Amino acid sequence: MTPRIHVLTGAGAGIGRALAAMLLSRGDTVVTVARSAARADEVRADLADAGPGELVVEVADLGDVAQVERLGAEIAQAHPRIDSLVHCAGVVELGRVADLDTASWLSQLNVNLTAPALLCRDLMTNLRLAHATVVMVNSGAGRVANPDWAGYAASKHGLRALADALRAEEAGTGVRVTSVYPSRTATDMQAKVHLQEGRPYRAADWMQPSSVAASVLHVLDLPVDATIPDLTIRTST
Figure (cartoon, rainbow, N blue to C red):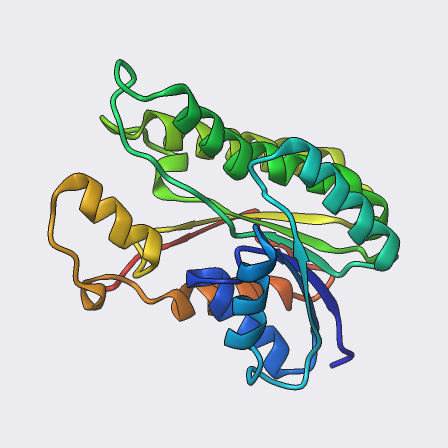
């Protein structure tokens, strides 16, 4: 398979890290983003032995709209043809609507929804050129909103709407759009959720990031005559 170029947010941990390692192992180029120069160095070191592919780590805070717009412009200029855009980065802050502070609302909406929308917009010419695949890694919260999950669920419901609209808009360009809905997965975010819920956390109880990443990889490798609009992945135990 000819090496391809993938823009992947969230490659520093969890599902994104597992997917980045899979792509690098087969010689693809992965362009990702870290919120600081120090974090970028950590991501490079963590994935240094993943394989022969090229890892490019840009520095930007996905919660800052101006930085996301700068990031999109820089990636678009550096990589005229992009084979996939995978939105895997995310943040979560639990809290009731009556209690959730403004910063928590804005961080979840900006990172989980606005950043994906802006990157899709700013990279669309590059994606169309490659007849690329866009993957939105969503959540069960993108389908059902439970108590204490209003901020996160609102951002993920919005991400689902973004994917549905984008899929219809780009139907004639060859750009395919997939929403992936994993159930609870053993990630750092899941550990944080358990802490906020006041429950003990055992990674072995949940689906592993590599299982979700393998499913995303399958979507990216589909022949051009096939697409999976929505993919739900649940733990088998």
